[in-house]
Image (cartoon, rainbow, N blue to C red; front, side):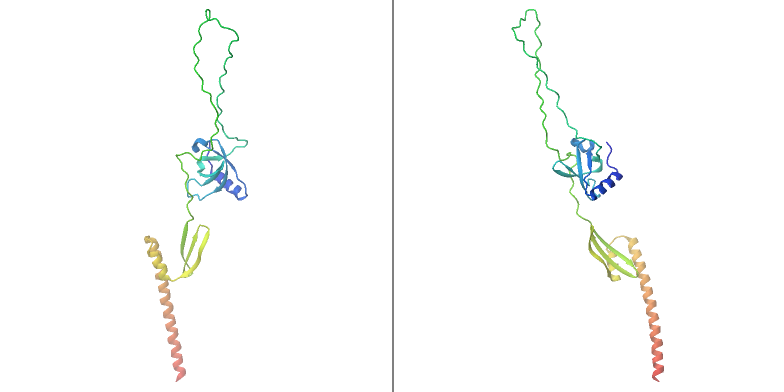
Length: 220
C-alpha cells in the first residue's frame, strides 16, 4: 500500500477547508488496523511525524502519512472470517455389528471457533500517540529606514506589532545571540549610523556658526 503523498495531503487540506472529511485506509505500517477505513478530521502542525488526525470508530488519533493512503472507491473494511464448523455425521438408526467391520479410529475433538468482534484498537504499541505541541513563539528584530523595530507572535496570533526601539536596545538584544556574523552586521549598521550622525552634526554646527556671524553683523 502506498503512503500519502504531498499531493494527497494538499487535496485533504482542501477538502477539510470545504467542510468535508475525506476517507483514508490504513496501510500495513499501521499494525493491527491495516485495511480498515477512517475519516481525516484535521491536519496538525507538520513539525510532528504524526499530524494527520483520523476518526476511527469513536476515537480521533494522530497518524503519520506512512500509516495512511487514499481510500479506493468501493473499499470496505477487512474482516477476518472464522473457518466453518465441522459437520458431524448422523448416528446410525439401527444396531451396528462390529464383527465384519473395522473399528473406526477415534476422532480428534474439534474446537468450535466463535467470531468475536473486538473493539477498535487505538494504535500499535510500537507507535504511541504523540501529544500536540503548543504554538511556537516568534520574536522578530528588524532594521529598515534607519530604525530598529521589534515584533512578537505566537503561532498565527500577533502578540505585539512592530514598534521602534533605540539602537542601544537593539545592540543589547543582539549581544545575547552567540552568532558572530549577526553581531558583525549590527555593528556595521551602528558604525554607518554613527558616521552619518557625526556628519549631520558638523553640518548643523557650520550652519549655526554662519547664522551667529550674520547675527553679529546685524547687531553692529
